[in-house]
Image (cartoon, rainbow, N blue to C red; front, side, top):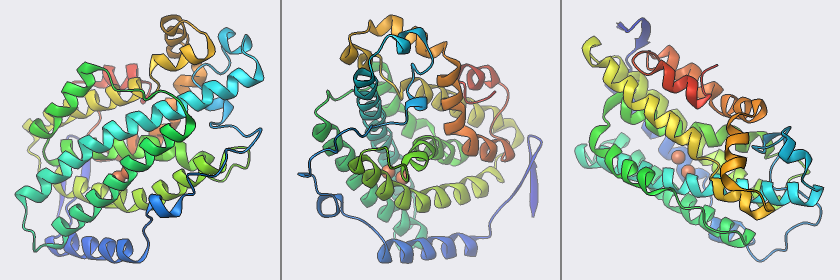
Length: 307
Ligand SMILES: [Fe+2]
Ligand SMILES: [Fe+2]
């Protein structure tokens, strides 16, 4: 039965559909998963002359600061930016693990959807280790999230439920997924980066399918009066992720002042377009589900996720 929630029509999946979706995803997990410890040759040398990130996705691309960098410095900056995204990815996965643990804790372990949540947690554990080993292999610093972000990540599992919970999961997964998909088949990118992306994309496709179905199901049951709460949580989550994908410390690696370079990146139309590109699909989905809008439309715009 369709339900109108804040101007958007969302259709709730029947309980049977929820179990069938989880059953299908469990079968897919059993037949196709990776173990990055085994499936990646961590001792292989990095390829000469290949980049770590597509140049037009670097946060300074097109700025005066970018024009002042040598080709080698541009590759070096891309290496640090991809490592920064991986480090923020680990933070996101730690938060996702706690959100999924909440779903499992409050659900029935005999149900397929709780069993799928557990299967997804197992994959996220392997992803976090994979990203940490990637950063180590690249020989760059670990770009830890700032203390406030760390604290907010601790808070989110306590305050998020229903569409706020599943929307936060989707923002965490889809923003990085879009960037990874764009470079996975690009021959100019390091084979190690492409393999990490390939593993992550394959397994995240299941996670995203699960979270989208759960968001649609839970959004249909949200009373109109609670809609601003879910939107406010998601607007803040989206803003914080978008602002923290590239940590300012990356600019030090190429001799730039982190504050000035950060300011240049935030004012850079190419960087703003990269953020918009990374969020294009998830924003369309969240918008259709009625999860984007007042009282936090300004935050979505400031994050560059909304044009
Ligand atoms: Fe993941
Ligand atoms: Fe995931």
